[in-house]
Every structure is written in structure tokens, then in C-alpha cells.
Length: 373
Image 1 (cartoon, rainbow, N blue to C red):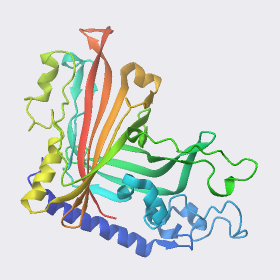
Image 2: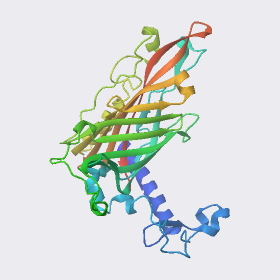
Image 3: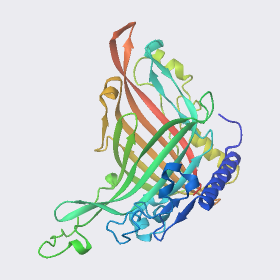
Image 4: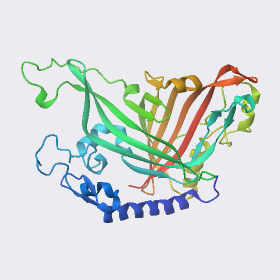
């Protein structure tokens, strides 16, 4: 872990990122009346230069659908009050978030046949960038006489090695969506036409509070994840739980590579980096005004699909994550998360590679990010 003050380092990195964003927007983009960005020729490959600064269909400006209207709402959706209202607890995520170089910690067990007990640890510090953008409108799931509307945020995540021989190389990337699910009358607006006006239940069914939030994840390892849960809001800072990244079976020898079983050891409790980030704020007299919690788990009526290779060698039977969206007293917004993926390894049993046993390993990551745009 770096001994440099994380807040001071963050301020430098934020300034660098903001400068890069401003330079890009100044020199390499124009916007049309819909807010769609057209990159200038100097910012795109030469073979695509003929497409720069041109609408998709200039001969038919009224063509339907108008592909110049972006899927993502202008400004990430944060200019549309109606979208913000319907997004509920997800609205605060909209924007770009970055961590300090050593802000995150990853406990990463990996199968390795020639290693003791058949696995190694590739634990590391990391930094990342996450972006969240709201789509324009709702996604309606109709039940016949009422519906469940999903107000949606798309996200992308890029994770990089903080140091070591692979410093600044991409280690992980994923995208997906967060949904805020709301029960509503079916066919609102122009879809309610005689004779097909739904007989809306009175009262409407109530959305289960513990099933209001959904995270859908697409991971290039070959995993598709559907995790469901709820949310909470309260004044002040969150209480960061102590994580346990130790394998659930295998005996004492499996735990040796992790080091001492104490909360201060990030190999066992990667959530310690979250508490360190909070403590650093307190030392600078920066407090947390309020916190919004998003908590989802595949065991809450969710599911995971894994490719055949993953099922055989490194299956993922469970995914859960908690995100804390915190508003700070210095005007900044902070996002902390702890993600726990259960890995089901097929490990060699002895020296015969044909003899294998299944063992469960927690793969836990935790990081603190700050909103920069």
C-alpha cells in the first residue's frame, strides 16, 4: 500500500483527469441539437474521417428512428428531472468515478496444478474508472393489467494494476446495468386505447422492497450475472463490515498463503482499504453527510450463467456486492464498494491430475472512488 496521503494523491489525479476531459471536449468534439457528440477527424482513425461531423442520415433529417438521438440521455441523464426521480437511489451514480492508484485491493485465488494445494494467490492493489449513464425512458414489463417499470443506468468498469511488472495494464473490464424497479399501471399514456384499456388493480401490487434493485453484469471471462436486492439511506457514514476472504474448506494449509487472520490484513479482509479511506477523511476533518446503500445478491432470486470451461474449472455459483454512495462535507461525492464472488475450483488432489476435488474460494474486491464528472 502506498504511504502517500490518498486524498492529496486523489486531488492530483482528479486534476489530471479533468484537464484531459476538458482538452478532449475543447479540441475534439462538437454537439448537435440532440447533444450527440461528433468527434473531429484528428481524434478518430483516418479510415473513418469521412464520417466525422456528419449526421447519420443528413438527406432524411426526419427519418424515424432518428439515429442522431443518443440512447444515453444528454449529460448522462442528469438533466432530465423525470428520469432522475424514477431512478430513485441510482440517480446519484450518474457520472464518471475514479479511484486513487492504491485505493483498491483484490484477493484473487487462481488454480495452479503445480502449486501446494493446487492454487496460488494473485492479490494486488488496483485503481479503476467507472462510468454510469441513464438511458432515456423506462423499460416496461407488462403483467396484463399492470406493469413493472425498470429505470435503468448503464455502466462500464475498467480496472488497472497499481504497480508491479504489469503496472497500468488493464486487468479487468466489464459492463452492465443497474435497474430501479417500480410497479405502475399498464400501458400508461397513448397505449391506453379502447377497447384495450387495462382494468388496473386497485390498489396496485406493491414492489417488494428487497427486490427493487437489480444489477446485471456481463464479464468477458464467460459469466453473465443477475443479482437482486434493495437499498437504504441514512445520515452519516456507513459501518464497513470485516470481510473474510479465506477459503471455506481445505484446512489450515489452504490458509497459509493469506497470512495472519486479522482484520488489518487485506489478504484476509480487503475491506480494510475502505476503512482506511474513511479514516483518512476524518483526519482531515471531512465527514460523511449521508449514505445510500445498494445491496444485491444472486441468491435473492437472481442467477448466474457460466460457460462450459468456467463450469468445469472455475465455476461462479454466487455473486454479491454492496455499494455505499456517500455525500461528503467538502462537497465531493464518494463511492465505496465491496464485491464478493464465490469461485468453485476444481483442484488437483495429490500429484495425479486426473484426481480432483472441488473447493470454494472467496474472490473479494474493494475500492473507494470519487466523482470527477
